[in-house]
Length: 147
Image (cartoon, rainbow, N blue to C red):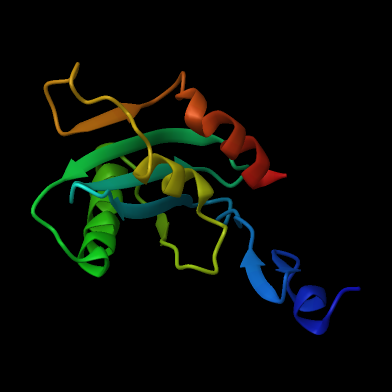
């Protein structure tokens, strides 16, 4: 049964008495940058960024290693900075940035990238960017996010 919150906001879903928010597209004239951060058990931080248009189409994705940060809150702030920098590099001018919190599921793609086990040993950089042929770890998440 739909409650009042769901009736007023179709992007909300109530599951197990917890509000979960689905990905919401930006205004048609803007680009949305979703960001997330994660620290693994060895203390390595990763930031995931995803750039999508109003139809949910993924335009670019990025994962970056950030070392020397022990606080998830600081890493989340750095994720926002990285997301804005990434959008600027991709020549995106009108941007909405969205991070996440424990009760939000609207940021699954960036979360998956931040938690990914992308192998950086073959790359001479601290980040990997995809502009097409996105990795399989995010393709299904991209599709389910917009449905």
